[in-house]
Length: 156
Image 1 (spheres, one colour):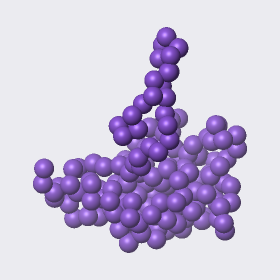
Image 2: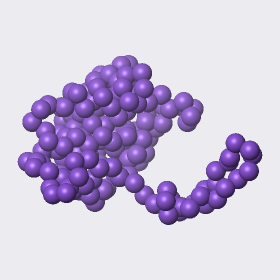
Image 3: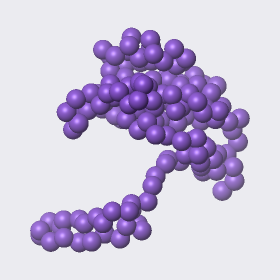
Image 4: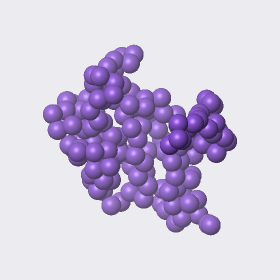
């Protein structure tokens, strides 16, 4: 498959509408260094020379707060009932002049330029891409009969 014909205008959508139910409190609001976790994710995207614009999807009660800190965001909108809904709303809000849309979880603040560039290259080569790391832990799967099977981490 050849390269997809794109002018390479990249917009990132930062998903920050989660409820942090498993965490027990709003992990995106917790301070990480000098700023909340979500803003560290925003900052990582904003510092990328690969990304031209950033939009944010957050909870309706947080929209004004996020707009105050993320002054360069092209949009800050309320998310939906689920991550899928919020992703759809964020992608739909991206202006049509952007060729590539990256969707990033605000709870992952340690994004690097290398990862951004590799994902963009993957999009240009294949039309879509995502970042993933190989599994290094031992993983077992429980069968319906109660037995455990060791999974081959090379396939995960």
